[in-house]
Length: 100
Image (tube, rainbow, N blue to C red):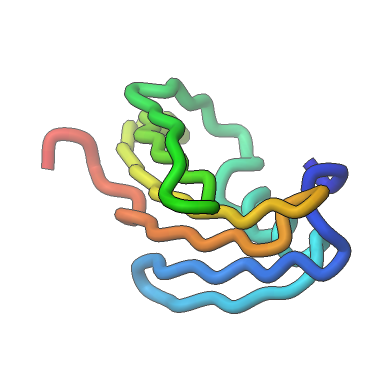
């Protein structure tokens, strides 16, 4: 994934329970690995790609299964791309117990 991120990529995220503002591909990848890089299994339940003005928009809903528990998470992302992604803005539902 690092090849898609600019050396100065800015990652802003609003997630329960925190707001994040990170710079650089290493910080972005580390955060994404914290969320999705464990022993968990996941399935894409729904996804969409579009464009709003000059920004690429993406949305996905995942079912994540780990330790006998299934949770659902949805994220909405807007990115600005030059040669690589320079701005990565994310809004996250947080991991929700399935059926709640």
